[in-house]
Image (cartoon, helix red, strand yellow):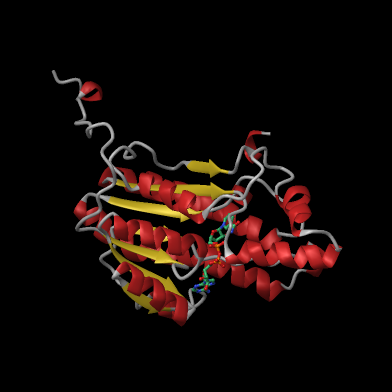
Length: 264
Ligand code: NAD
């Protein structure tokens, strides 16, 4: 009798890179920062890329740079998500926004918007794109979560709640997708050098009357043993690896790219 638990799985040759020729990827928030870096990396690996962003100018610029297609869409609008393409093999749920305020002063409509863009939109996109991945027997869902999907910080209730919800959604997708060759994982960056964070550094330096270097060291990187910002290209490299030939057994996981923050 065959012992199925010992059936050998053909291993890809060590060192084989990620070749996504013939695959189609969709990256939300692909016009800027991490999403832009992911779109460029996926295109360099051969994927056809759909760049989804509410900002028309940046979405079109990245689509041009990747030879892909821009979709100018507000992900808070479920009707607009219904018009996005169905034939997706790699879904990168990346679009996000932040609002910083104590719970007692947090605007309820802002809280709800953040859940819609960062939880409901990834769910709707999974619901839309998983049938094609299941039918093809291969797919990759990569959710750009955050260290705030694993840890909390004061004044970020909507963002921390949304990222924790995304972690749960990603795990359910992993369990449901496993029989079909579809993995779902999160990547969990600490602070990344993007326009969003560079703006925060400038604003906090002005607000507290301290240098940008001090904001970086004493505020942003206080909990990170590695004392530098993460680069968007480093996040994109992890996303690409999750789409590569050596990652089929890794699913339902959360990959901390946090300079050791969550090790403490
Ligand atoms: P960014 O602001 O540079 O890019 C976000 C993109 O999402 C923008 O192009 C924006 O137009 C788009 N977007 C926002 N709301 C949208 C909507 N309703 N519909 C369509 N597009 C929308 O930000 P980033 O720093 O690259 O962040 C990308 C992701 O990475 C986010 O989910 C964020 O939470 C996560 N993240 C960022 C950091 C960081 O330090 N920058 C750290 C951890 C996690």
